[in-house]
Image 1 (spheres, helix red, strand yellow):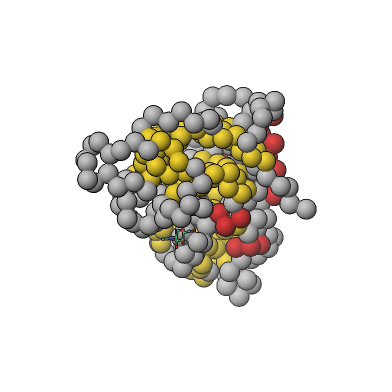
Image 2 (cartoon, rainbow, N blue to C red; image 1 turned 120 degrees about the vertical axis):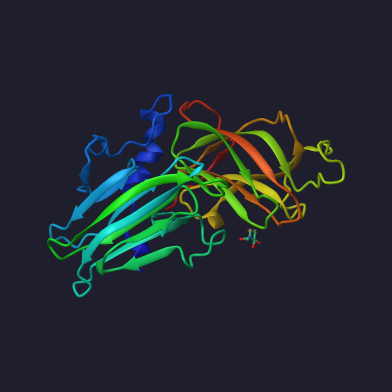
Length: 309
Ligand SMILES: *[C@@H]1O[C@H](CO)[C@@H](O)[C@H](O)[C@H]1NC(C)=O
């Protein structure tokens, strides 16, 4: 496995510095202007590609053994489907291609291993392949490859398909409103932005049993420090310098029932911002949040991440 080899310092640098360079609107992380051109068959040339549109792509090795990555991201309610239409990568010269369900940046995974076990999420192969189709569970997927043998390569077709119950959402839009639901199950879901962000709770129903009085569950308001109070269902709001939620700096963990919360927004000044809903499966949980990228550097942050040494 060569997951950890790809250090995506480039992306992290630019995602972090973007508040100063970006203005409003629904701009996307655009590191691949050359890929935007509408052509029927496109060639993968850059070693690190982010955010491709749907279509068919070719890669042909020029004989370097670099580890490269194609970072795919669909809309929050979509999944990424990658079909390897053709693959010819020499195993004997250490050629390897992998499909990862999620993203990996600097050795850290989204979704994190604690919430989505690694087993079955990484598919590695080399040799000759006719056709193989993979689908992500969330809206993020990654193709990593190292093809030292000149002339070897592969062809992929990328499609974004509907995902009726998104759990883990990686966000690169500068602002948006997102909802996480557990559908009554025991699962942990998160929304992560790859930039510092302001988070406001729009609606909250977590850890409260509304079955006794359907449609009229008791409004508790937004409760704080729910994890410390021993609630089994809660939502962590925080940030970190990487994708690993076990390293998350948590500003607060909230729970309760509030259909119209008026709590102050969180301004998370970290490389990444995460809202993580932990569900025991005992209650039907949902949270709707509004997220926007922090562009105003005068804004007083409510959480600042410690920079790694
Ligand atoms: C969800 O997260 C909690 C706390 O981190 C953990 O104890 C639990 O095992 C996780 N559940 C799942 C299904 O991953």
